[in-house]
Length: 197
Image 1 (cartoon, rainbow, N blue to C red):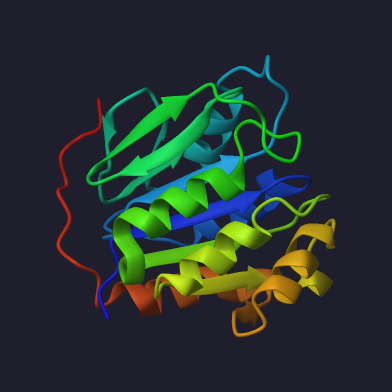
Image 2 (image 1 turned 90 degrees about the vertical axis):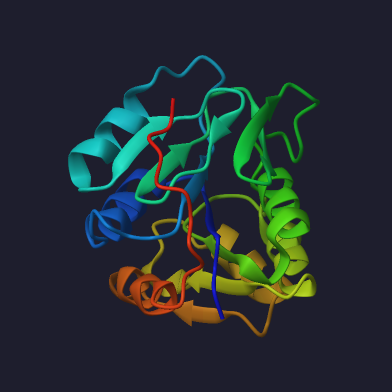
């Protein structure tokens, strides 16, 4: 089954987990990746810079209407929700969800509604339950759910909530997630490789 988007959500401990996973993916990884990491509303662009140093993939902080591109990690900017559209990303300043903006649930739900069975959702370490209902929505729309094994998470609350919400999800240790994404990408749909602007 081909996939067109990998949607990742994380909070506390996310930088370390994302560094591990993205560092294990090759430059030619064929599926666009969208990352929501909870952070303070006045955070700078340091997250994208740090992730860019850890992976051969291109890492960009999302600007409104950016094209989704293969080989690219699209990082949610501070204090904006991300909406996944067909081929691009939009930013909104609607009210926080579960005290979070960006919200993992908002991004996951829009990804599932747009790409349905072509969506992979991944929940990583974190200290609240954001993302659990969005991951369930991905599965409802026919997509695939991956969850970091809570035993390998710096803070297990977020992956534990996701396991409760999506008992059919694949639960994998942090060290195994990059390899699993590579396996799933072998049947990836053809995606525009234009450079994001």
